[in-house]
Image (cartoon, rainbow, N blue to C red):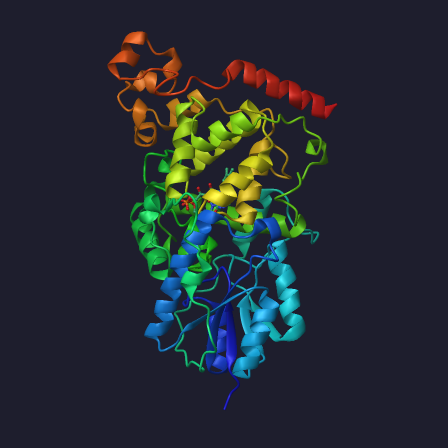
Length: 462
Ligand SMILES: Cc1cc2nc3c(=O)[nH]c(=O)nc-3n(C[C@H](O)[C@H](O)[C@H](O)COP(=O)(O)OP(=O)(O)OC[C@H]3O[C@@H](n4cnc5c(N)ncnc54)[C@H](O)[C@@H]3O)c2cc1C
């Protein structure tokens, strides 16, 4: 009889189009394992909002395996030690997993390969990171040429259905509740019921998006419109593969073309992580290493809590806190505000996102912050400073997004909601807004903050 095959699930919590599942199922009876590793990643251990997601995603995966007659074995600790213990108990040596590229993931792959017969498979990205190279064989550091080259390797292979699986007798498992993944303090999860973690939830989200994908190109920048896919937490946890998304959103005009390009950014980010494993900790451009950031705990707190006095910034930060997600346009606005208006180190913002986002992703998050800061290899120049009011008027003209997330301003007319400090006392009174009491005054003046940021930048340039 064939030896039991271990599937080491990581951020690839699905059964369909999952090469490790397919290979293990083809080779013998299967033992499905997830190991919660809070040690190897150090400060990049899974953040609080994501722990909520992980809990429910593991519940969903375990239920799917149960329907097929199997079980999910849960272990906590270093994967090499835990998988070795599982293998010993099950008389197994072969482990199948998808390849992941965060520095701690690479470390653990090497450690597992030392003690077991580990086979790594592709499938977490459109193309294996490191394979999209220029004519001279070097990896790209700029998105557009990267994307042009990646498209030559597209489409990805046709997505495969979940295989038939035969299961081996599973060894002892932890009890998921003992991991206390839901025990964030404060408990945010009340606002997280907009999400359905798990493979079925991912496909439901994809189906919903497929109906409006044609409108993506013109609608994707408007935070009040539900015209982006909201697939980021599903993609991050691997509940759906990029190849499945690509196949579902192919050939429907301009919307899908720009949508596939966004999925390409995800591949780009991990390619940059491969080249700069410390992307989350160090600026790509050395000139930013000594940037004169301000130490401003009060400002940071106001930003985190959505109390800056700039309605579009506060709306975004409150959407993040309540739902674990923020629209991309608003992520850019709030990141620019923190790093340029408040001159606070981008790593403080990155950490807050890491803890609050259900889609927190080392590559995408670090790339996004360095892009806004201007310190990335491919990034917006530092002196491109978003004007919060201008952005708000342009992308939330009727103020629907602000009204949803900053309800104390909801009754202000459209022409006053973006900058309440400029509204007439009559308009404020009629809307029940008492600046400084019901809603804060702006914590910085835009023009002064802009000048201060540009002066700081000039200092860095020497
Ligand atoms: C400061 C900052 C931090 C960010 N942090 C994260 C993060 O931690 N995790 C994360 O997944 N995305 C992050 N992004 C990128 C982007 O904001 C989100 O991927 C997007 O808002 C998710 O919503 P969606 O699924 O509806 O996106 P869609 O517009 O529907 O895009 C589809 C998918 O493409 C990928 N994608 C889209 N935009 C980007 C991008 N700029 N970079 C990389 N991948 C992208 C995502 O996987 C996304 O789900 C960040 C952006 C900024 C500016």
